[in-house]
Image (cartoon, rainbow, N blue to C red; front, top):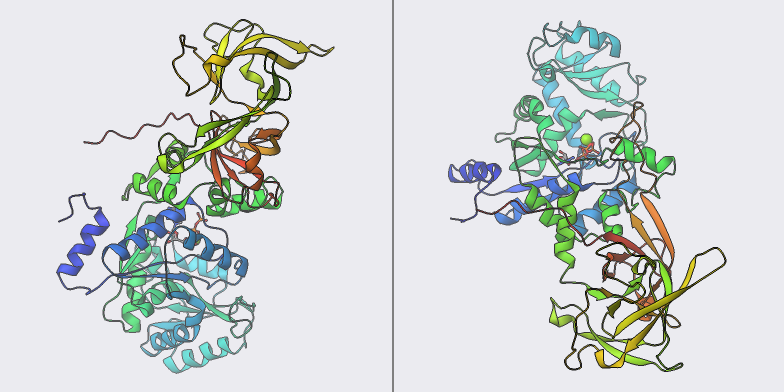
Amino acid sequence: MDVKSRNFIEVEIDKDLENGVYDSVMTRFPPEPNGYLHIGHAKSILLNYGLAKEYGGKFNLRFDDTNPTKEKTEFVDSIKEDVKWLGADWEDRLFFASDYFDRMYEAAVTLIKKGKAYVSELTADEMKEYRGTLTEPGKNDPSRDRSVEENLKLFEDMKNGVFADGERTLRAKVDMSSPNMNMRDPIIYRVAHMTHHNTGDKWCIYPMYDFAHPLEDAFEGISHSICTLEFEDHRPIYNWVVENVGFERPPRQIEFAKLYLNNVVTGKRYIKKLVENGTVDGWDDPRLVSIAGLRRRGYTPESIQKFVELAGVSKANSIAEMDMLEYCIREDLKSKDKRIMAVLDPVKLIIDNYPEGQTEMLTAVNNPENEELGTRQVEFGRELYIERNDFMEEPPKKYFRLFPGNEVRLMHAYFVTCTGCDKDENGNITAVHCTYDPATKQGEGQIDRKVKGTIHWVKADTAFKCEARLYENIVDEEKGVYDENGDVNVNPNSLVKMESCFVEPWLRDAKPYDSFQFVRNGFFCVDSKDSKDGAPVFNRVVSLKSSFKLPTQQ
Ligand code: ATP
Ligand code: MG
């Protein structure tokens, strides 16, 4: 047996296989193509895919495209890209619910023939009135006892466009007094004269979710239909549909809790609004936790897999923190990325005793945690850029960087001692001055003294100037996610563009999705949308500091 403890879904699947309820495992991810996928969906994708892999079974990607009003091919394409990128390979098992419309129609006819479905003339308002409440039973539809022949004829008329939208519905004949509202003769087909992204104008009736969804699973032979808790109350109607249509072994539905993130926007309608009012730059804005946004920001599939694994699978709702997601990407990139020098907010550093015109090449280790990444040469000279906040004229206690009289190490290079600074007429610092000690070159022999600070730099005349973008949560965490109108409280500092950064010259050739650690500043990834050849824009994926701690392992 696996030494790792098994989650409750695995325990149930084990039992079903042992008892011969199913001989093999088939799972699916069934998105509705009405928006982009987000981190919550990643959990469902990786869970379903992971189970299929674990049991040597099959995994289907199926678009639940039964509602033509909100669905678009743009979303179909983005979902495919995201699922693939996450590593869930559906191979040739790509399905569309709309490809089953003929079979679904036949299934409805089967129900009618068995006296299990009828055509209703109630309006939407009447339907509501007849439905009853949680404490009162519903009333029978006046058409409930229509003959099979009449129902068959009327359903065909519905299909043939005889009725206008809303004039007739097909209802399942279940139980108007059931305590489960979903069982009170739910509508299974409605008239809707709409063009569908896949079937065009072929249909003017469309199946409702509670009828279509279980049939899709049954048609494909899904063994375990894994879904989130809100579908628990729908399970009885799903089973009713599948059994009454004539499937002997309905898929087994198992529900788990959704993955929520604290202070994060995931709902499609909120993101849609942010996209439409221009607050964000599309569904792939790096501040969003859409899969496309995370990818563009610089998250890796491995980091999301790790996050989903840490979040675990459970029946109880819980809320994960962004800190945990950030922890996962840091862990993934810390040994993968080269550590390079990039100055985000530059000020000049002039080494007055370094000969003018002289340059030298210094050797830098690319990543001390990963020897395979090798070394590179960095050019050094008299004039450098350093971070503006690495110098202070009048430093507070415990400031160990540059201030007049203090000595620091220039990373990969020499010790320098600060001698002062130049200012413009407004008192702004325009350059910092220092002297270097040639006997302190990194990697060359013993140095007789220690310094408390090490700062990074780039050579001023050859560094590559570029833009870096720093992000914070799009949500203003102090105000909470939503305001009183249900709109997102947007953090005004969620995007800061640093437009005059200086980085090592070879980064000019960095390509979209390449990522680097900018020492002391965080992990950065080349933006895939706004970068041009020879002009990369860098997104900060995450800073280097973490407050997250892994729960201690037993
Ligand atoms: P949202 O309302 O958040 O945009 P949705 O549930 O409407 O999402 P669907 O396309 O219907 O999106 O979802 C596809 C699958 O993803 C469903 O099986 C659903 O249960 C699952 N899913 C959606 N949100 C989450 C989540 N936060 N955690 C885990 N699974 C989720
Ligand atoms: Mg949904």
